[in-house]
Image (cartoon, rainbow, N blue to C red; front, side, top):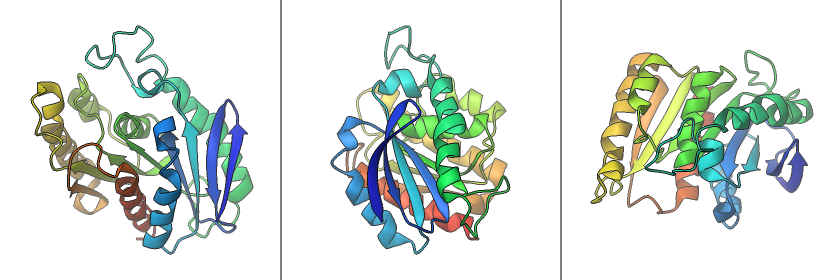
Length: 238
């Protein structure tokens, strides 16, 4: 698998690519993930036999670029909640078309739109963004949302009235994440359980899963993401 750091459109991206890729993985990544991306991709490769392309697009303002709307608990900046749409447009109009043009003609797992099936994954706020993005477009075949920040204001109401367009969704959460004195963060367990129940109604029992990981929020996020991608990739073959 070849690794390259490229500027695609307006963002720097880390791209890992097999020559005969069958699926495209996209993920918002921050500076804190620079040291773990190699291990994440290695873990995905060990878990599946399907060749893939992975593109990690760099995010500099985590809350500003990924939150679908403002929540003062996260940030009081007025710009927060206004740019998730721009981030999604970057994916749909720039990053994904670019990679599809390079790798999308070889797949035997063609998406219904042609080209590679696209899986969007993310951790924490990026997991929230991945789920939200899948309610905005039918471009994503599957979603891997690890420890998603579903405790933000009004997510449950939004999700109820805006179903995901993806065909399968993987959720995971650390089993200690809800054991905190902060009441907002402690709500994450019930929020993720509620999302899983909703997805089972929307997609069916066999098209979604909820994995309880060991530990808190910051325990091996890259390996949790690798497990999410492996499940999502396998879901494309069923």
